Amino acid sequence: SQQGEEDPQALSIQEGENATMNCSYKTSINNLQWYRQNSGRGLVHLILIRSNEREKHSGRLRVTLDTSKKSSSLLITASRAADTASYFCATDRGSTLGRLYFGRGTQLTVWP
Amino acid sequence: DVKVTQSSRYLVKRTGEKVFLECVQDMDHENMFWYRQDPGLGLRLIYFSYDVKMKEKGDIPEGYSVSREKKERFSLILESASTNQTSMYLCASSRARSALHFGNGTRLTVT
Image (cartoon, rainbow over all chains, first blue to last red; front, side, top):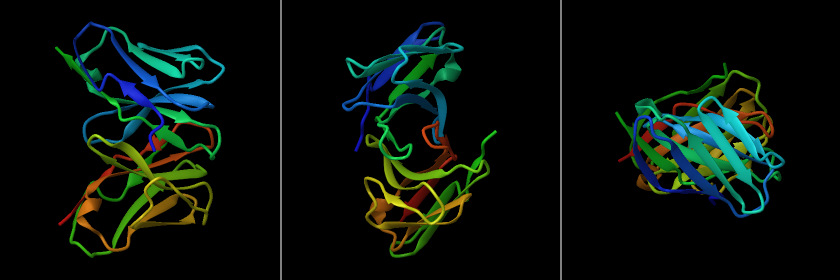
């Protein structure tokens, strides 16, 4: 059963623009994680934000978490064609030994 | 760097065959997971394991079994492959409460 739901399902932008993807979830969480998947490959972990954190940065990535609204956003600044991938949020409910619940993902396409 | 290795990138099997998908990790992680990924359905958890010889059902365990005899290896078994098990299979490992590290996936086709 999915926990997170990403929005939008697909996003198409030009190089240099910012890309914002949103994730909503339904239950309380221990942490929320964002992953990236290039076509036909495995997922790669991008960033983890704990339930007591509100914002986190990593390079061109900025993640926010609003536990009162049960939502998170991933911002990629100054997008590059190489950022083209699917992006997934995943939630750790804190109950079962690190099991994550994934959303269906946002497909980001960055045009040169 | 953590490495999670899945034994095959592509696999083609016939209906009714017994299929083994192997996954090995080299970072002494306690947790290992098997997901399948289908278009429009995202990642769905089949089974996971938090210790040697321990296993827990995920959301879609029917038609699958798993084996974890050694800490570094987690095998997914399709007892009698069916066409609806055609999918991308992803293995992952982690320490408790930490990020998952994924293999590159096995694309299984059952004909």
